[in-house]
Length: 290
Image 1 (cartoon, rainbow, N blue to C red):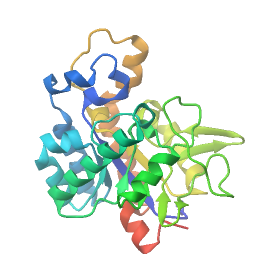
Image 2: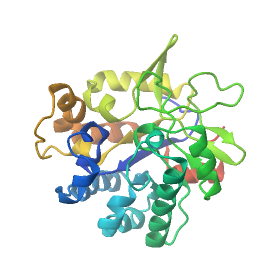
Image 3: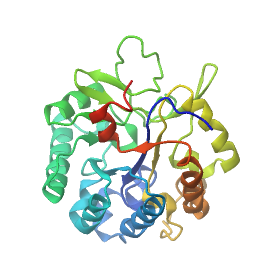
Image 4: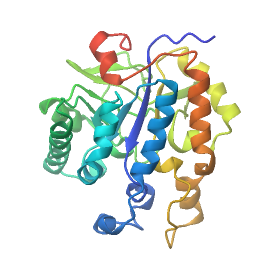
């Protein structure tokens, strides 16, 4: 059995299929209200898997979705999962002014808190597009952690942070990025000087499962496992989008046919070996922060 040095975290970014950055040029923000909403059905399938295995997770919920499907937020909360923020409009942080970003996260936070009656502590930026200015604004409005730093630096959408001394260029453990404010990086595999994206999204969908599982000991020897997925990545029935290139189709839809079965297999296998926690619980009792 592999012994993880820290707690491990399941996280799900709750947005609908047409809100993926892969489709932004084909389904712009102005067309969202005319699209078929499919996020509730896909999220319910995730919730069913977690219930079957008695696992708890952190759900970073897009405010736009929460406003239109409040029952989904209530179900996530009533099932014992953490409700956190994915912003409101799913706009990459560098594409907004600081004022626009502040308005976006405040709108989302207030909406989710009004729905749940509980403080929203965590945030994840769309496409992991975090930066230092965003961290300062999040702290200002009562967030206590961010989980947006993806240590794979070669992706053009991923953001970056000025790291505390000793963290190195690609930190894998949770760390205090400001006094009292924590960063929970997405898990990656490290091979020599290479940092390889691994624990979620398209990387999880398209890697053969036998290869994916071989990377987990590499992660767990050094850090917590921080895994992420979007509901649309389990949705095999998404509408076809005219004009989608072959590369975009592969990036967006590759592996969706088997993703739900793969997610269940992964959780059935590794929940026997690891302790999965809500991120806010680890911050509260210190079990995941070392």
